[in-house]
Image (spheres, rainbow, N blue to C red):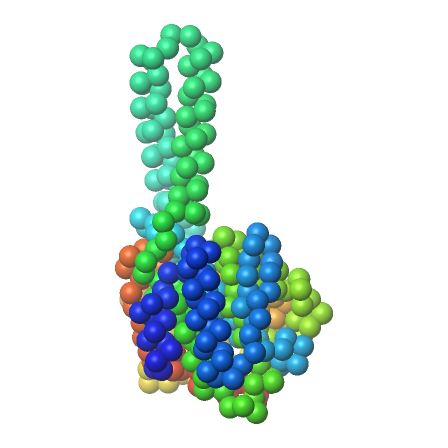
Length: 312
C-alpha cells in the first residue's frame, strides 16, 4: 500500500459537498503531477464533475470508480448480486419500516390537529401539507443528508484502487489506459451517464471496469453484461483466484447497480462476504460501520489491472 492510499484513507474519505470534492480534486492534481499524468475535469448532468486521466480514444481499457460519497443512513445498503429474492425481501422490509414510520407520524399529526382546528377543510389542508413536507424531508435526508464520515469500502476502496493502478502502470502502457473518477453515482449514476454520452462512439467497443466497494470481503465478483463477456477469458487470466482472494468472472446475469451499467461493455467489480449458505453480500456501506479495508484486495486488483492491458 502506497503513501497515496494512506493519505486518502486519512484525509479524503468524505467527498460529498462541493468543497470536499474540490479538496479531493486538488489532491488528485498533485498525484497526477507526481506520477506524470495529464488530468482534466469533464462536466456532466446536475453539475457532475468527472476526473478524467488519460485519452479515452486511444485507451484499450477504461478503469473507473465513483469518488462521490453517500449520506449517513441508519441502515446499510445491502446488496446480494446473485440472490435477487434476498435483495427484494430486504428492500420490502425497509419499505415496510418506512411506511410504518410515515403512518405513525400521520396518526400523531391528525391527533394533534384535532385540537387546533374544527374546520374540516382546514384540517385536511394542514394534514396534507404536513405529510408531504415530512415525506420530502425524509427523501432529502436519504439523498442529501449529512455525509457519512466512514466510506472505506464505498467507495474510497475504488478510488485508491485506481490510484494504485496508476502508480504501478509502466509508462509504455499508459497510452492504452484511461482512468475516470465518476461523480454523482450516489445520486443516480449521473457522472457515468454523462461520460458515456460525451464519448459514445469511443466507448462502443471498449471494456470499462468499474471498481465499487472492493475492500470488504475476500470474494471478488466481476458482474458482466452479455456483450462484455467477450472479454471473459482475458479477465480470467488477469484476475485468477489467489490464496488471498477468491475471484469469479460471472458469465450470466448478476445484479450490481453501479456505474458499470452506464456502458455497453461495462463490468462491475466488487468484493463480497459469504454466508454459510453461500450467499454473497455486501453490507455496512452507507453507515458508520463502513471501516473494513483488505489491502490484499487492492493489491490483487492492481496486479490484475496492469496485466490485463496486455491481454486485450
